[in-house]
Amino acid sequence: MADPSAASATTSTLVFLGAAVAAVPLLRFAGLSAVLGYLLAGIVIGPSGLGLFRSPDALRTVAELGIVMFLFVIGLELKPSKLVSMRRDILGLGLMQVLVTGIVLAVCLYLLGLRDAGLLAMAFAFALSATAIALQVLNERGALATAYGQKSFAVLLFQDMAIVPFIALMPLLAGLPGGGGMSQHLPDIALAFGALTALILAGRYLLNPFFRLLARADAREVMTAAALLVVLGAAEAMHAVGLSAALGAFVAGLMLAESNFRHQLEADIEPFRGLLLGLFFMSVGMSIDGKVVMGSLAFVLGTAVLVMSLKAALTYALLRIYRQPVADAVRASVLLSTIGEFSFVIIPLAGTLGFIAPREATLYAAIAAITMFLGPVLVKLAEPALARFAERQKPDETLTEDFDGAGGEVLVIGFGRFGQVANQMLLAAERNVTVIDRNIDRIRAAGRFGFKVYYGDGRRLDVLRAAGAEKAAVIAICIDDREAASTIAEMAVRAFPQAKLVVRAYDRVHALDLMERGVRNPIRETFEGALSFGRTALMALGLSEDESEAIREDIRRRDVQRLLRQRDEGILGGTDLLIGATLAPEPLSEPKRKGRDLTARPKPATPAALGEGVTGESS
Image (cartoon, rainbow, N blue to C red; front, side):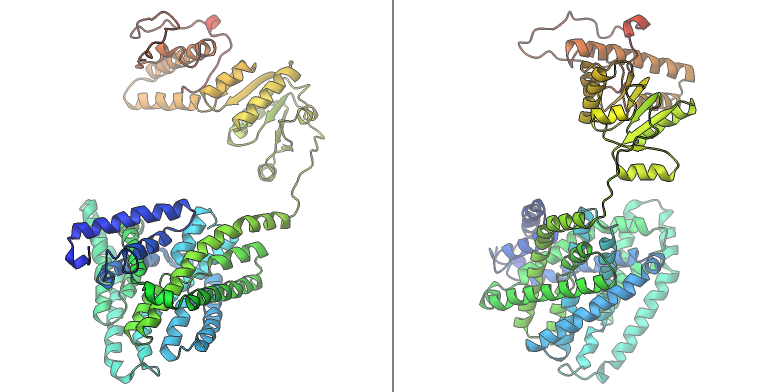
C-alpha cells in the first residue's frame, strides 16, 4: 500500500490498529510507556520503515484531534480549588522550572545556530516535559500521592497551562526579527481576542444549562455527541480566527471544570482522546525522516543527551532548593528530563510559520522522540538504586520487642481490619487482652487511638512466650498471611496445649490445612458475611425474616458437614451437600463412596455430628 489515499479507509484503519496492537503491548511488557509504542509503530509503518504510508501529513489533521481532546481533559481537571491548593508549587516551582530550563536551553540552542523566533519556540518546546509519560509512570508506580509525585505533577500542570497561551501566541512571534511585520496582524489579534472572550462567556453561561437540558432526555449517546460537539466546536471556533484549536478545547474544559457533568464528560471523551492521541504519536513517528536523522545521527543523539542532562540537573537543583530529599529530587528530575508531547505540535507549527527550516524541524522532532524513548528507560534503571539509597537514608524506625505488661487471658496476633473487630468484642466482654503485631505503622496508628499493641513477630516461639501465650486461655490468630497463620497455629498447638485456638482462615483450602495441623475451629473470614448478605437478599425478595434465617442455618449446617467430609475424603467430599451442584465423574475413575440422590434434602445434622462448630466460606 503506497499511500493512504490510494487505499481503502478500512485497510488504512487495519494497518494503524494492527501496528498499535503489535507495538504498544511490547513496550508495555518491557515496562515502558505506551506513547513509545505508538511512536515506534509510526516509524515502522511510515516512510522510513516499511513504507506502508508515505504521506504522514495527510493524517496529521485527524491525529491532532487527540491533542485537542487532551487539552479539553486538562481543562476539566483544573478545578479552581485544586489550583489554589497547589498554587505555591505550580506558580513557584513550575514557573521556575520552565524559566530556568528555557533560558539555559536557549543559550545552548543559540550556540547551535538558532536565532530569533525559532530560538524562542525551540527553547520553550524543549523546556516542556512529557506529561503523558510522566503521569503514566507515576500511576503505574502508585507514586502520584508521594512528595515527588506531587512536585512533578505541579511542574507538569504549570507546563500544560503555559502551553495553551504559547501556542496561541506563536503566530504573533512572526513579528519578531526573522518573522514578518506585526502591524499587519492587528485586525486578526482583535478578532481573536473577541472570539476568545465570546467563547469564555458562552462557556460560563450557556454550557451548563445546555447539558442540564440534554440530561433530562436521559440518552447516553446524546450526551457523548454533545461532549464531542462542545470540544470540536470550541476548537474549530478558535482555529477559524487564527488561534490554536487546542486553546478552544482547553477553555471549554476549564468552563466545565466545576460542572456537575464534569465526570460524565471526561468519561465520554476518554476513549476518543486515548485513541486519537495514540494516532497523533503514530503520525509523529511516521513524520521522522530516517535519512535526515541518520545523516546527522551524532548531532541528534548528542543533543538529546545534552538536553536531558541539563533538564535533569536544573530540575534537581530546583527541587533541592525546595527542600526535597535527594532520592525524591533525583526521581522527579529524571522523570521530567524528557521533551514533552507538545513539542510535536510546536515544532511543526514553527516550521509552518517559517521560524525554522524543514530539515531542522525533522531533526528537532527526532531529538524530542529520542528523549521520550530514553526517559522511561532511565526511570526504570534508576529506581532500584534510588530505592536502596532512600532506605539507607531513612531513620531507624525499628521498635524493640518490649512486652512489659503483657500476659492477658487472650492473646491476639494481628491488629489489621479483622483483628480490630475481634478485639472490640473481647474488650466489650471486659477481658484482659494482649495484642501483638509486626507492622510498625499499624502499631503507631493504633497508639493514636489509645490502643496498646506490642511489637512482635508471632512466628517466633520466644515472642509468643514473652507475650504470655503460656498463660493465655485463648490464642486468636487474626493475620491475613495464610502461611504465617498456619505456622503459628501449628506451633501453638504443640507449645501451648492449655490455650484454645481461634484461627482466621483465608478460604476453604486454608481451613482444611489448619485442621490437619490440629486446629479444631478455623474461622473462614468471609463466610459469615456472605451468609448475612444472602439472608438480606432473600428478605429483599420478599421472604420473611424467619424463613431467611432458617435457610441461612440450613446452609451453615450443610457447609459444616461438607467441611468435615472434605477433611476425611478429599476436596470433592460432600459435594452432594451443595444445593444445585452436579458432579460429572472423571473417566476411568472409581467412585469413592456410594452414590445418593442429589435432589433429596439431607437431614439436619445433630450437634453431636457437628463436633466442634466450624464456620467458614464455601469454596
